[in-house]
Image (cartoon, rainbow, N blue to C red):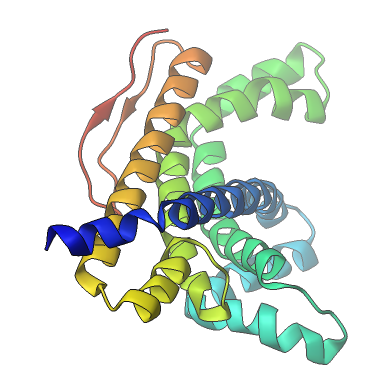
Length: 238
């Protein structure tokens, strides 16, 4: 048994490379998701019916179709329309589109949580609509939904495992390749499990530290749900 574990030691560089690739895809896809989520939330509240329909259609399509199918459409389907993407960027775009739809609902809830009286007061003070949104609405909305945003970040990290289906050498894809070479399924997947636990907890901790520095008083981070296991975290005071 110890010999089998030692066999995997030679694959440490591959696990580290896969972990780094997983983090890259997670960060890029999440940045895309944040932008799409905010824009979609604003479009959904637009007085223009066309923008509202587009926003609602995007959210409904994403929420009612499998993530894996969305990945396949971006990677295998777009080349038929003359748009070819490698597995890396196809994964970033597909996961960004998916999480962006859910974040739009999160942002919408956050925006609606801002008391209307504050908006009216800001208008009386002579602030333009853009200023009101940036200086009054966005900070309070972000604070209200920050724990949910972090939760989706962790879900996105764990969702990168689906990209092994398009041969991206992230953690799960790399583990599959190593399994085919060594046939050490239990050991390989155990190492992969630990890697995901480390990455998800590091991201949660970093997000908690960021929240503690941005928001005062610090936020209480709720239990995670979805792909990840849940346990309570509370950010420390900066």
